[in-house]
Length: 148
Image 1 (spheres, rainbow, N blue to C red):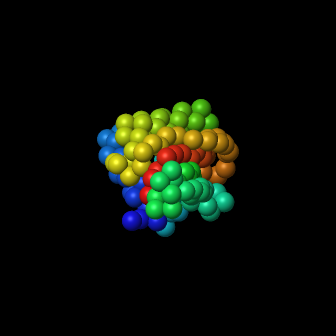
Image 2 (cartoon, helix red, strand yellow; image 1 turned 90 degrees about the vertical axis):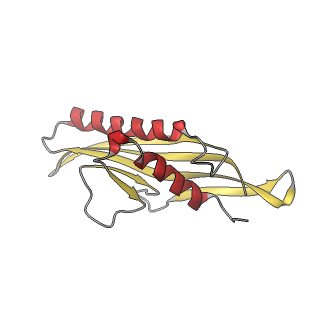
């Protein structure tokens, strides 16, 4: 019996996101980057504070032999417009986010890893710097009712 569904769900969510044809040219990261970030990227298991996942486990109705698990996986979508057009960067950021949302909602179980998952909290920021207009959306994949 697994001690958590977190590794399996992250793998399933990444597979769903990577399978979206419209994201074929987008850098999709499993956790923090190990190379330079592309202008458009999606990261699963990444937050600015460094925490990939937060959650808890509790005894299931069946007692100590089974547990219920709920958690939130920190994710990030970002787009940079080199011409410093914030409207373009923002629009692209939310197009990428919509693709992630569609992938997760198409299979709310993460390929059978959990009972239910969906988009949770969101936090949007934007800035201008030497690279151009940068639009970033931090969000969580909220997993509920996972039984392990």
